[in-house]
Amino acid sequence: SKCTQNETFQQGRLSDYGNVELSPAAGVLNYGQGLFEGTKAFRGEDGRIFLFRPDQNAIRMQIGAERMCMQSPSVQQFVDAVKQTAMANKRWIPPPGKGSLYIRPLLIGTGPILGLSPSPEYTFLVYASPVGNYFKEGVAPLNLYVDDQFHRATRGGAGGVKSITNYAPVLKAISRAKGEGFSDVIYLDSVHKKYVEEASSCNIFLVKGNVISTPATVGTILEGITRKSIIDIARDIGYKVEERSVSIDELMEADEVFTTGTAVSVATVGSITYNGRRVDYKTGDELVGQKLYKTLVGIQNGTIEDKYNWVVQI
Ligand code: PMP
Image 1 (cartoon, rainbow, N blue to C red):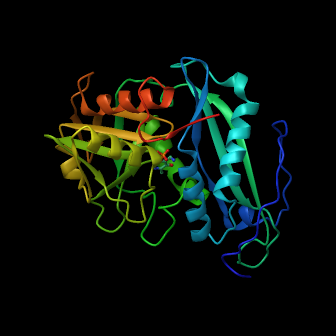
Image 2: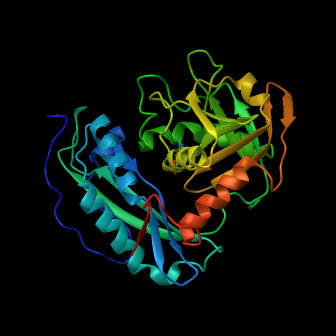
Image 3: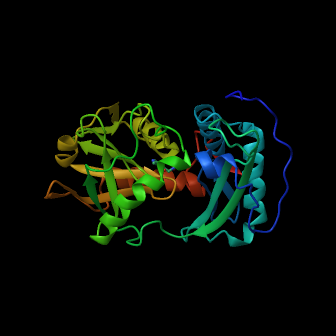
């Protein structure tokens, strides 16, 4: 069957949280045709409810669908479904500063397919759950472990998109690192085992002097929406931001390191351990990452003017 099929998605409906029924031959169960997204609904000080750049999640899902030979909903259908899910779960959205409603859009191949080819049918669904802080340390600095044995993505793979197939292979690395007391894993590129890619579910930035750098997204790194937003904010407040190759040695010598993602927002990195060596970084309120964190959160909860038009009130 064809790879990119442009069928329109039938209108869905809201229903109570529950199980989904699938054919044992569903494309997602057999060949991993599944993409997910993650976004949050926030409650502002005045009680209004906001989403942050949901169109960017929709576009990322479309790019992912193209890569994984799947059909995807339109941007409008995606954003409408996210809005409806947020509104239907309004009472679960925590007060400002106390967390948010995490929203999980999921696109899966639900049509039966026995031979290795694209599923003949796709289902798009959205579910949600209230969340507090992602890391159990809360806002405490993260202690990251550089794993040069396991890779998140290889060149030519699906690392640049939010395919479910990228996540199962890192569970072992994460569980090993967490078992040794680390917060998360940093992955290196699989060709040279030298360049920094990202953490399990967030992008990485370093600060050296007045320059902020982050690994360029070259197909193996997920283009985080938080990453992109932080680059814009940082440039607007006068920092030079470079997207380029960053070696692990350079990261270890940085003045400051932080990670970005929907789940973590902007999180300070306290230490990185690589090859038996641990470096500790500056932490505290004066960090560049903390300044960017406060700006991003302020825009998201409506206390800082959103000159970018990123926030969508629902
Ligand atoms: N990298 C990976 C591997 C991720 O799963 C995520 C979470 N979506 C991110 C980075 C951060 O992306 P975003 O800022 O869009 O949440």
